[in-house]
Length: 151
Image (tube, rainbow, N blue to C red; front, side, top):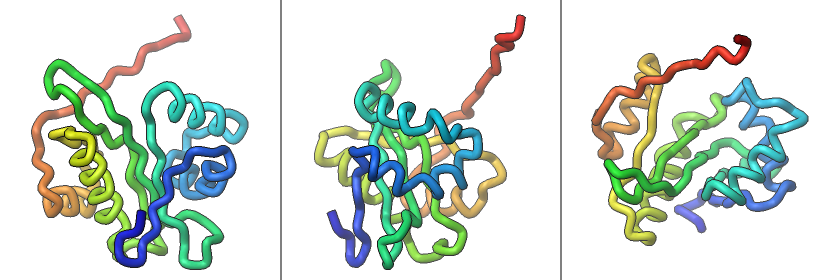
């Protein structure tokens, strides 16, 4: 799917995921080089996860990506949840993140899904500005708790 000059590629193969490795690791520094491929393939195959990326003009690497999944909750019914959205710092300000959000909106529309959700860190004001400009609203606080497995 193209949006003006942007080429959106849905990663379905190990080669396509490997093409995104640098940008994935730049954003998610907790990823492990020996397990990330199997983890992403399992997410794609078992969890309805989609990894969509935009390649650089020279087609040598990915410059932006979005990771999302279709899910159902009692609160929202069917929704798309955006796990990750990231643009390489050298390529920011070119509309990639907004175009990826528009891509997900289009996927929701085509699937008859009425809402898209995401979480964002408090300090990410540039990202928040984009989300507000794209019609997102602050609808709740997200709480998380780490479980100590060393006990």
